[in-house]
Structure formats: C-alpha cells, structure tokens
Image 1 (cartoon, one colour):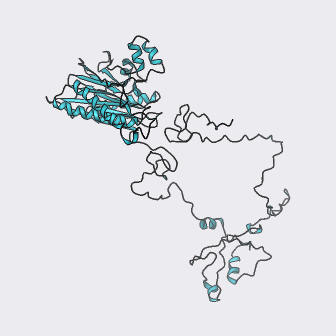
Image 2 (cartoon, rainbow, N blue to C red; image 1 turned 90 degrees about the vertical axis):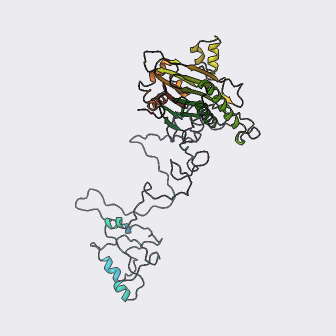
Image 3 (cartoon, rainbow, N blue to C red; image 1 turned 90 degrees about the horizontal axis):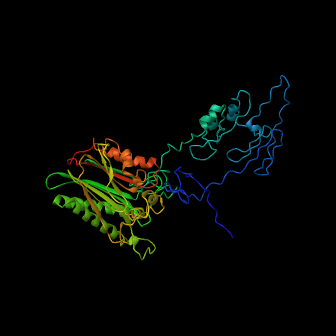
Length: 489
C-alpha cells in the first residue's frame, strides 16, 4: 500500500539550529515545517583526468554565433587580431540588429564627427539613452544638427570601460534599502522584517515564531526576586510567578513568593498558571495586613487560586460543547511567606521549596512533599526513592489545581529556622537538575541572601546548562525577611 513520505530524521532545526525531539513535526522555536526537508544533492560521479567528458546538455537548439577563427598559435611577430563586440551578430537594446561595416547607412556629419573620435577608427558599443521627453531612443537636437533641421542626434559612443561603469545604474543594497512603514498597530516579524504576525504569534510570511513576553521574565521586589524562562525545548513558557511584600499589623514585613507550573497535557496551561499565581498573591496581600496567621492565609490563598483556575474551564475558549475532547486548564502551585521569625510554605502538585542556610556547614532541607506517583510509591513503602524517581511514571502528578482535579487538599507547613539563609521556591524545571537538598545547596550562590536576583539567574542558568528540557522558574527569598523597601546589593 502507499505510504506517506517520511521526513528525514533531524537532530537540529534546518532554519534556526534549535535542538529537536524525536517525532517533532514542527520546530518549537521558529515553527519550521520539518516534513519539508531539502532532498540531498544528486550524486555527481568523479571523472578521471584522461576520461572523456560527457556532453553538456544544451538549453536550446539555437545555432551558436559564427565566431571568428583564431590565428594559429606560436607564429612569432603576428599579434592576435582584436575582435570588437560589434563584429559579432546581435541586437541592440531596442531589438534591432546591429549593422555590420558593409551595410552601415551613411552617417550624418555629426555622427561622422563622433565616430572619428575613436583613435583607431573603430566603432564603439552603442548605448541608447532616454531623452527628456521620455521617448526611448530619441535625443534632443543640438548644435549643427539643430540648425540643419535634423530630428535626432547621433547615439553617443562610450570610448572606454570607465565610461561604461559611469553609465550603468548603481546597484541597490537590500540590507540598507528603505522598507515600507507598516500600518500603525501592526507587528512586524523579527526574522524576515516583511511579514505581519498573526494572533498565534507566527509570521504570516515566513512562519517564524515570534518571541513571547513570557519567554523570559525577571522581577525583583525588595529583597525577593524571581526568574522564569521558557527553556530550550518547549515552544512557550507555561510557568508563572508572583513576588511581593506586605506590611504586617506590627509594622514588620512579610515577603511573598508564588510559583506555578502549567500542566502541559491540559488546555491552556499558561493561562492556568498565570491565573493561579495572581489569585494566590492577591489573597495573601489582602489577608496578611489584616492580621491573619500566615499559615491560614496560605491555605485560603491556595483555595482562591483553585477557584481562579476552575473559572477558566467555563470560558467559551474551553467550553465542552466546542471542545469535547479537551480537558480543563490545570497547574501546580507552591508558595512561601517569610517574616522576621517564621517561614510558611504551601503547595499542591510537584513544585518544591528548599531551605538553604547561609552557613553551608549546616544541612539544607526540602520543605515540601510531591503530589506525584513516585512520592506515593515511596510513602507506601512499595519502592525506594531512587527506583521510584527513575520510573517513567515518576512525574505523573496526583494533585493539581483545575476543574477536573480530585478533591482539593492544600498542603501547608510552618518552620522557624534558627539561622539566616535563603528559601528557594521552584518548579520541576529546576529541581530536575538539582533534586536533592544537598545538590540544590551546591548550586545556590553563597551571596544569595544579599543578591537574590543574581542567585535566581544563576539557578535558571544551571537548568539551561543541564539541558533545559522544561520551563524553569525559581524565586529566591532571604530569611529572615528584610524590612520593606530593602533590595539586593
């Protein structure tokens, strides 16, 4: 039976050189159609030096010009004759035949004067020029020709190669050529600079994927900072975060960090993570200044985030009657609230919080437990941790925010560290490359407490250097909380 042509296996995109995954049909970075792979060049046989060259195919059967015969080589004292362009049959720019020496019509006095200007008496190559009236081949009568009533001046003769270059039009460099200004409000492709960008973020002319606002985001709020990056394999960033500070009733500060990871197998995971992060952050900023206990405020914030994600499922874009085979938007959530003497964490899913003390001789710790298949196997004593997380089902989550989730069970916990340090709030895009608490502590910079933004950048860079297979988001919060208004050095 007939089969569809199979695309050539590629390890990198032919357009942008981005790495590809097995089974990709389009490049996730630029949108290049990987099924349209150029065919390899035809095999050209190598000919031996003494072999006969194959006849070169002729483009048409027209007879070649009758070239003048060359003189015998090696005759001393006999210079090779000079063949002028006019000696070879052809046509001028107007389509008329170039006349030979024998049948050339009698020239006007002005033409004779122009022809005698050539030192060797030969005819030069003729170039027709436009007249001021716009008629091709007509020139304005001047001098003696005007007095004698002649209607046309002789065609100008260019006597040297320099004259030819002066007469030729100047080429236009397309790199500096002026381009038409697009209409107001139109987004132009960053790749070809010619096509407009459609609502999906792709160029309508070349198909190149345009950079999105969320591909790489950095934010610093007082002493807390966060960085989110699309990674090297995904075509969009489905993570989101929110960082802020709130004033407590006693005048001290509370630092808030919320990190969410969209579930890729669900509909609109990027919208789900953004809605959850914003809702949880707003709930915490409203509850903490009113004197609510941070742990209760964290529980209520997770519930508010769940309601925000559930609301996306009833929007027209994901209504079941329009998309019956799509599941509801979903995401994970992890958050931390840091005060002068208390650390509160809350989570649903497999995003994590790590504690890294400033004194690296003290042990670090992971403060959350994953809602995942691997964690359940370890907790039930059915598998060891190494064996469970090596299984292909390890990252299948058992808890999430979304309309089709099981009964919501927000996890919260409170800690009172006895020494300063930093709190690392992150998605699995980072901890996949530093899973254990000791591994995470090794990649956190020693000055993370005073430079949280720099520390977050270093941690994201560690994930990208490791392969960047997933979106990566991390927030770094110093403990104890720095007074409101203080920033990183």
